[in-house]
Image (tube, rainbow, N blue to C red; front, side, top):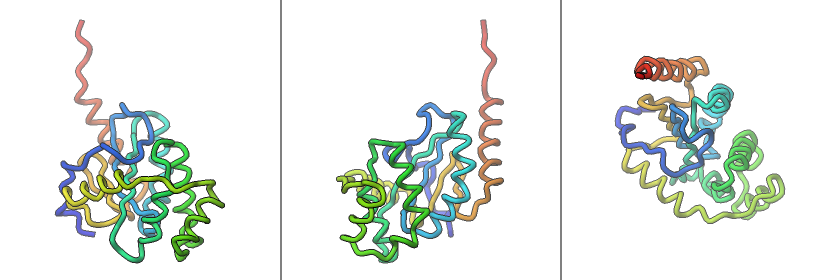
Length: 186
């Protein structure tokens, strides 16, 4: 995946599903589609390490469910409307479930997807149109073309980034923050 054209300095932390402390020093913005197999690879690799950093207050994850105009991702676009953005914990549980079970629902029709979401997650269709449109506008403005696209501060990483690399990026950012802190002056 060519990330050289992405304008990561224009990627915002606005919108999406915010998971973790808002004042966490490191922001991880993840453009994902629930049907994307590469997003599953990213999720499986990154979630364990990111979860540790979210829990200790170092990282806030911002999940931006990206409705891609690609037939193979259409079922993901549909399931995005069954995510409750306002309930972060529930949204994260649902995202994890849907990514984990991609093969189970990936070829279902639109009606079947709605039933699947209702039966498996107790979910109902949400009106996420405004949020979806904002995410699409941001991807156009920033030249984010692929899923997953993940921005960790000034780093752009992809689905194949190893846990060790993710941890290294976060630790390097934490080290820079510690170095830039000024001692308290009395």
